[in-house]
Length: 278
Image (tube, rainbow, N blue to C red; front, side, top):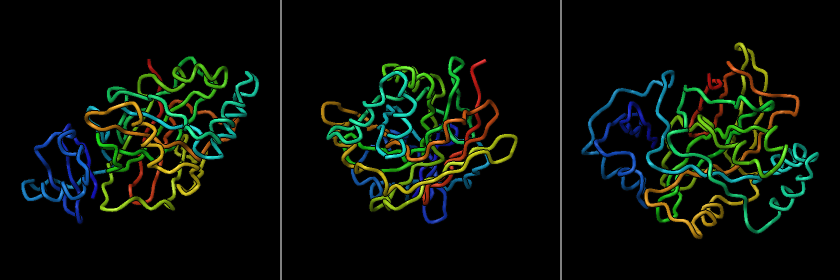
């Protein structure tokens, strides 16, 4: 089943039917065995109009924080080493790729996250900007993985490449991330062989296309979740981006007006257009 947020309300898609619940996002999603919990709620839900994916949708998030994991794919490690070579920081990425402990960092509060068919931003003080397509987990307050969505971890490669200590500035700013179009809730786990694909359009022409399999991720999803919860609690659950394995070439940078489309099998396609702060 899929959970959408439309105008602040939660819409549930199950077996080609759409339902609206009176529960808030946090009340609905923060449950162990979420799939079964939602099934118990469906009889009390009202029928809802079908979701139109050509229209903007709220990001599938409530009060949760958004965190991110880095250097979980070999392609990401190689790209980070190259961008940080001049500053002498390239070896950090090699070390974390092989280390027992993953790289985890805070990405955003909900107020800075865009939804489907909304704008994401590139920084005005950056010269090299890319989208990072990532499988994103919803993890309950008990540390169990209960849902999956598509994430775009917008990043300034020029700022992070200048000095790894600038990571927060490269990653955290207004409209620095997007999530959507839905939260996929399964009775069992997501297929680890699922493909994730990135397409970037400029003036409606395709200027970049790439993809990878989630199976190429070095670390397991539960491993990332377990490290995140080691010393940190999340009373309403948390969203966790799991890293990117698709990186545009070094001579590519996003421009205002570009359209970014990220697809993951069984979840759908997240679409955003690129802008800057005025």
